[in-house]
Image (cartoon, rainbow, N blue to C red):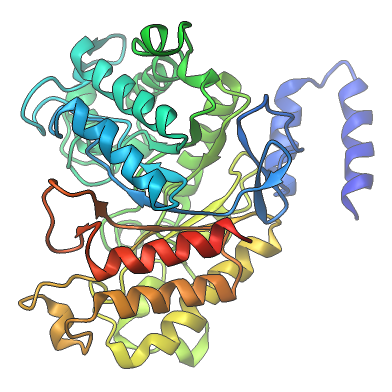
Length: 424
């Protein structure tokens, strides 16, 4: 049955007095088709099939993660504004930064102080820091991707929510416990309805986050997954905990925010092994042990684009297996996303230049720039709609490991990729 026929059936069902919006939600989930295109206001990034658009024009992009810019653990405000201008001068178009900070994980002034099922304790100074970072991006002409929570403890993890709301250390209950989800959904609503305190002084008017075109996408989480074999060891279908949560939260976000793109923030793990070619030691990426089903998640009707986070050195993939990275990771994920009619973004990637790091023993040596260029070459070959590095830091910021200065050879690779994406 084609999609037009399905729409006719849906229309007839909705005319029946027994049916309504809830039925439409159910049918959209069952059909596993992308939601109908939304006519977002001017300035909002939208999708057009497997690519992005901005005001009717193609929007390919190179970006960077700069995750601490919106938290009070970062640098001075002047440095954040200058950093955003530096990114724009290099041709970058998108910055991804944490949309969260909670008590216990950063030095001072976190956004969230405490939480219960019925109430949330906020810190205005923490909110204002994120307001400022968004204003800095706006002033530089950049778009921002904002994840809402972290799987790991850093800055505000799922474990913070389970401890606060139900006094449990099991972070997996974040996906399933009704009380935790009620609290988190309330926070999501508050987040989307937040009025940016900096905009009135900067541009003369107030804007709620949900109405802010500077924000390119709301991301449900940073790297949602499970501990290894969590579902398998409990007799549960692998990938279902995360899938069900992403489905529920994506509809909740869409109900409160009709204009922004929504994504999952996942790394791209699968639950199906693709034959003998997956028999390397890193079969864990594809065998469901991480509790994520990329192939199923990408078909969620309110998820607008797919993400992957790929670190060959950190994932213990030797440099002589880069062909496997290309064919079984990057090409395969692009094929899945494009078959679903959605863009795919290489949202995190990079190589650690520390000579004491694992990557040296895996054959990557001291050539992070060369291997990053290889990753971008592969992404371009398979028509990724966006690429992002972890992380490019302007002069004066801490660098090391996967973080590189804008004067480094890695920055040259990023700049070249920005030129390529901006001219597509």
